[in-house]
Image (cartoon, rainbow, N blue to C red):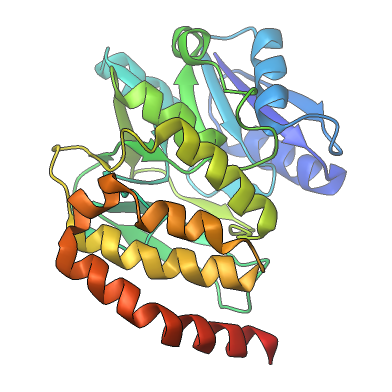
Length: 294
């Protein structure tokens, strides 16, 4: 009934994942392991796995996660049965994607949707239970999902396959795929299944390079909102987060100025916000540079 496709690089993680699924999913399933020690991009691995899949419900997820909810597979199937226009389900996402995208969260909580226990691998922070946007409902409509878990159908995947031409590493495949799906189908973060995810995003130089690929493909359409309302304050805040990542990774400032000096960005944030950003740039840049050099 469900095919689970993994781009797998750690056999211990994979075995733990299989054992957990066996005792929690509650329906017939298959797991397709695409062993991937940097042999494929994640888009290539997922597309290869989907071709091999036998079932109509396809789940693309990370192997460093476990499910805490019993019979979660039954719930996933029911969502697709109840909503014939449902394109994808996940456990983290947003109903607003700003012009300068710097990762999930940190914009306005009213747009965020999370339901998981998040552990941290790349930063020194305690694990946290994230339950944002539920408001006593089973799901929240979003425009894009985080890729640690995406459930969809064979028909949807065949129509929107993961873009292995533009995304050749392990980032932004999820945002791109679910954004395209959300143009014609419903995309939801659900709150009646709880998972634990044992790593967070690694916002390194490779991530920034893939972000530039994402921008080349999508910048003419960003920002994207579920209700078509542009939140200029969110986009202004995203600028500083992007600058921080550029400085932190010693990445070219050209990419930063290409974003904030574009006509589209000016229309979104307005002259006042843009002038403030430019006037503050020298001080903020030096402060960030000194911080990361120490």
